[in-house]
Image (cartoon, rainbow, N blue to C red; front, top):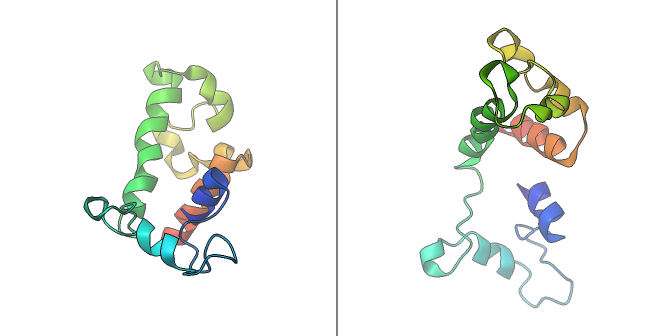
Length: 116
């Protein structure tokens, strides 16, 4: 998630060194970001929900791209690889996506490796 936030926000709110050198309390943003939403924080849980987040692409991508089941967006086969989500390709289903080296692919691969 750190790389994801850095790409999206231009900085990592989880960096304990702060977002700028002039920040008086370097860990303020990080501390606020991990507070529960009900307490005015960002509600981020550093590792608790990582596996659930990483499971989302496994659930959604096949529904979008798989021609065999009349996916919602069959043109994504060029991104994921034709037939990647068919049962016989379960072991290599993300290979074409990772090989694309897109930002999303790199972040997904990095986070998956980190979880393991």
